Image (cartoon, rainbow, N blue to C red; front, side):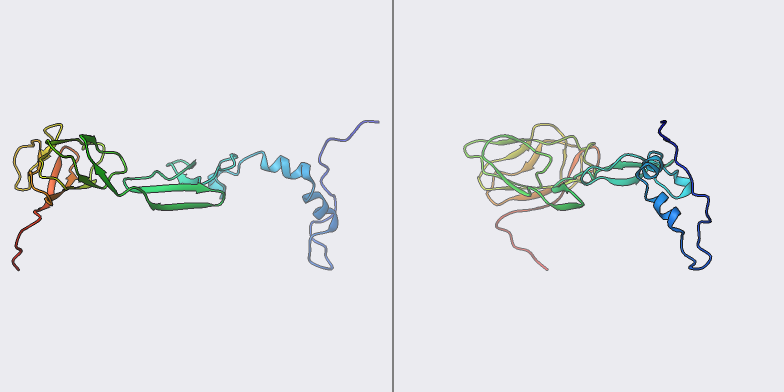
Length: 199
């Protein structure tokens, strides 16, 4: 005897004329696993209200419009931001914000505030390319009476002018905030430890 592998559509009307509800034959047919598999195997196009995707999202993936449809992708963490993807949830939190350096250092992607605590000699900081981080802010502060300089001539002084290497004078407590303009690191704010502020 041959097995019927076709999905036989019920011949009765979809709605029962007496109850106004779907007939039992249709309900049983709609609950048939073969029918469900067949329909889920093809993506409903975006123009028809679907996503156009048949892929099951992984933890933290979101539907992102791409101009012609949707793409599944996760959020990208920025400076000082951590993203944790879990089943059915996305957690966004602050990551590393304050670090202390005791030797010459390279600014990490997560560094926001940096304390220079290198003793005995000028501290040399290697900043990331300003072109990669437009708008990023980094604040540095001295805990030692030592200069803090950049490894490259990519720091514009607070008063403007050509980019150089100077960041902090050799005074404990001096601080400055540098902001990337996409070309260099601009000193936007700065202060010394012992100064009198007038209003």
